[in-house]
Amino acid sequence: MKNIVLLICVFVASTSYGQTIEDEINKLTGEFVGEWTTYKLNESGEIVNAYSWIDTLRSGDPVITKSEAYITVKGFMHFDNPNIPPYKIQFKEGYKISDGKVGAHFYTILGVESIETKVGENTYVISNEISPFELPQLGFKTINQGVHTTIKVILNVNGKEIHKISRISTITWEGENKEKEIQFLSMEGNHTRVN
Image (tube, rainbow, N blue to C red; front, side, top):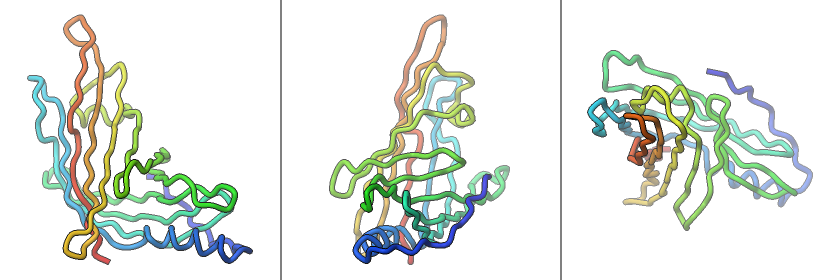
């Protein structure tokens, strides 16, 4: 995985500018634990469990530049399948900065940037094209087109911050001499803040 180079925070001349951005980026720091399951289409055309895992994420080391403010997220994934070794992941999460104001919330994972859109008080959506390396995980060799729509709802349950996340995959492909389509839940899980 491509390592993200950490930069030293840039001094911000305007106090209100610095505090607003710092406040938002500091909300992203912390430690989270999660449980996840992915699903795929099998050869019989049924949606089945692909694999499951638990993970721990630690986010911190805020960086603020003129164009963005972000933290680095380091994670460790442990799969329920003994044939899949534990996996370390690192990615960037933050906000674009425009005219001194906090803008779009983004994630950069494996060099791919995703923009999260707020659609409700505690509800967020990300839409991404499905990448070729994901196809075997979803049960496909080739597709005509495919989109992931990820929905995140942040809850406060018994004083704990919980992120409930579901991903819907919509795919068209060639099958039996005609174009076929499907939309299915391809991933679900949660992250709970523990620190």
